[in-house]
Length: 337
Image (tube, rainbow, N blue to C red):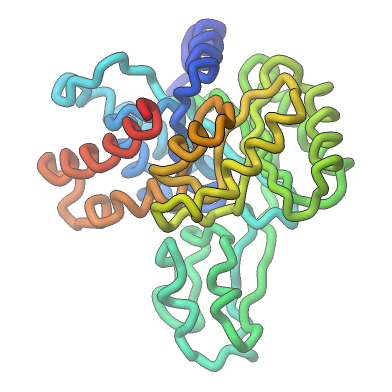
């Protein structure tokens, strides 16, 4: 595998897509290290016309994702996809303390084996009591909320950021995203410097919510980050992180509200709706006259096709076709609304 050719042309194309508000990004999950699932998601959503795909900064996941895209491209003739653009692949890293990159763990001494955590896990990372499949955990915290015994803890998985990101770029990654929902600016800016040193010519993204920051603090942080990454910065305005399970306006309300706040800062950034996004996000954004460069959808997009990609016969052609049709309906709704 090798880097994507003509990076300048690809940069201009991505800029045009975002200027038109048509960047549909499917999120595999910053903490989702299930390489097999990553392959399946990339295979389906590439054929469905997704313009970008976001994944964990795990090299096995990155390799599987690239394979998924390449296998999808080998099938393009059968799917008659109009105006195909190879998805812009993004890897996500996160600050210690950001929930996107934390891992849940069961504190056995406190666990009463009540099973409350099992049905609420959106990625089936808890197959049985006293066990969490770390590679599938996305750090959403649903298990912790459900647990009445305070038996869920969290840890941050450290990675060698520079080496992993450098290798990811070599494998075909074009964008890097930093999850920066933490209090202090200083460590965020240090990581952001590294991101932009490794990817100095492509778009880089910060995923940020209002959990710790006032509107003023949010604006100040983005301004400082623009100084490091002018003219090619994306802000993924994360309404309520990892909350997009339902397909209604209330679920996506905060995603649109967060984008509206960032837009009113009038800063030179591209804004992606995120955090509770679903098939209603674009409609609500338009109804509220909130500008956007695109939409990032994770939980809802993954759950939409789980029944197909978890079928033991997948990617048998008829099953794959059903999965693509389902995914395509979401992509088209978000792009053509």
